[in-house]
Structure formats: structure tokens, C-alpha cells
Image: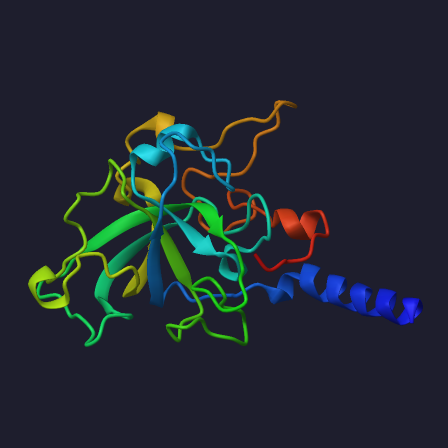
Length: 223
């Protein structure tokens, strides 16, 4: 029984650590978007400098992020997110204005069994999407009225979850922090080795983060 248990663990470990488990998402597409609170100046999973929080950032769902902990290949990438409609409200809310924002990925949204960041290669999240962007909001970088609403009809202003379209864009010059060198790049750890947050990743190996989990043979884990 012990041998069988160890064998099953090893099979799971190898599968989970395989880079093939990550989602190879298209450059443009649709996703869900939630929001989370991150302290001002916080150093999140990508290791991006604290000044990055002065500008729009987001966490990306783990299996698209490309790591279960620390940095992944999506670190530093910039996306233009456009609000489409709400998911959880009844009936769905379609805004009469088009609002978009360019974000930089600085964090990961941990994989969960059934949450918004539960998308895998073979399973969509509750919003029928593989990807979820978890926007850092409220934030000094995003207007308080960024999310449209109709409080008189719904009785609340925060819908919590939106359907969005996304387009991969160059961080320079599209991201609001692109002109501030203090907001680009990554911090250094105690060994003076830079953790991974490229200023403007292109997908090339020389300017895109590897998968910390793959490099250290760490499996993905459910939050």
C-alpha cells in the first residue's frame, strides 16, 4: 500500500511539474476579471519593484501564469483589458461605456478547485474561461469610478466579476508606469541575484521569466 501511494505521488509530481500543464494562451482573447487588495509597495510573486504598485497591475491565474510559486513566464507581461459585461449579476450588466486599462502582471492568483483562478488546460473556471485577471483594486492607479454600475437597479456598485477581452501589448510605451524607471524591473534578493520581473518581456528567452516551479521541480498545488 505504501509503495502504491508513493508511486501515485510520483506520477502526480512529475505531471504537475511538467511545463505542459501550463496554459498556452493566445495573445488576444477573453477572460474573467476579479479584483484583490495588495498593499502599496508590496513585492508580489514576480518580484517586481515596489513602485510598480503605483500603476495598474494584476495577478494572473496560476496555470496561465506558469508557476505555482514565485515567478513565471507571464511575469511582467502587459495586457489591455476591456470590460464587457458582468457575470454574477442577474440580469447581466452591459455598460453603455467602453472602459479599458493596461495592466502589468506582477503576481499569481493561486489555483483552486472551483474558484475564479481554477482554469486549467482542460477545465474552464465558473465564468467559462481559462484565464482570470485579478486586478489590484482599489489602487491609486485606477479611478474609483473605473467599474461602471447601476446602483439604483441592482442595489450595489461592485459586481465583483467581469467578463473582459484582453490584448497582449508592449509594456513600453502602453503601460502607465513605462516612463518611470523606478516602476520597471525587479528587486534583488539577499544573494544579489535578481528575481524575475522584466521591464518589457517579448517572449524571447533572454527577456522572459522562466517557470520557478519547473526549474525547482515544484508541483502545482490547490489553494
